[in-house]
Image (cartoon, rainbow over all chains, first blue to last red; front, side):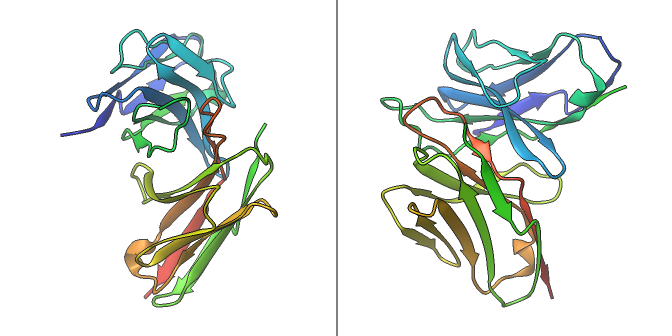
Length: 117
Length: 113
């Protein structure tokens, strides 16, 4: 089954304790992205990746890191989480970007609800 | 950078009526405008999209219109049904450069039986 998976689905942690949220897709998609969703603010893009070893900042990258060492995986790293990073996080992927043009549907993972105390 | 506004933030309609959600964007270079639907507790899913070289697109009960001059686009749902109740997000991107998706804040649609 074609899908985007995220782990963990729920996480409660404390300020300053490094954590990683994993994202994996089995659709051979080149483009992957991370979003955070907060009430009244919609989905805000954190980082995205056009391909392996190619990543770029979205609108709210502060406090986050990503890596894209393999095509299928795109982990989100919080080196020193703070309470303002409490949010619902979504990973998404879409098909190959042809000649820099991306009109492709994004497929979202199930979400990770993170609480930082 | 791009900024997307979306109105209304909440919308209640009677079953069978039409619903319209409007979005405006700031960057005239944006050329791709998708709409995503998010049911309660679930992930967003694409329902329709439009490119800047098209003024209108329709898929059964849903349609999207785009006015590039005014920099706004709208989602139209006709003959609404209870299963249309969800949060709807519009987005705008300049698909030819980078892939920075900017979403609107969302509209919570409630279809009352």
